Length: 115
Image (cartoon, rainbow, N blue to C red; front, side, top):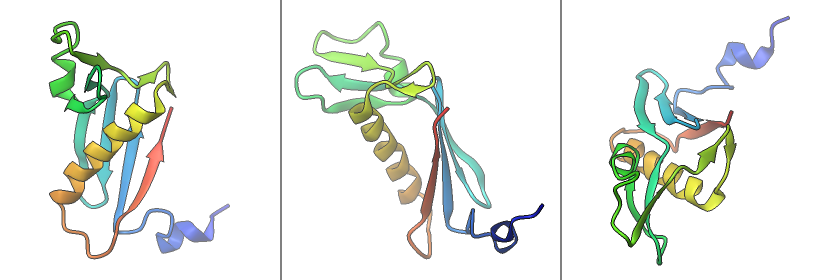
């Protein structure tokens, strides 16, 4: 059986961004371009202020080597969101990178997949 919305492209329109929030890596796909981001799902935060000090590969390099005031965390654990606030910060950071480097005629639609 075919679903009518597949024919029109309504499920994944031209201005769509797909996000795969994985335990190990986060991937972002832009329709027509393919995967434009593949980064580790790791965030480095200031221990006191919880301000972001690094995201992705930069934060992964800090795992086990962070100065006393900085912690590196994996907000996704065993296929679930373990820390909602940190996951939100990571997702906002990655999406900002993609949106500033791409021209969308209209506000893009974002589809997010969590294992």
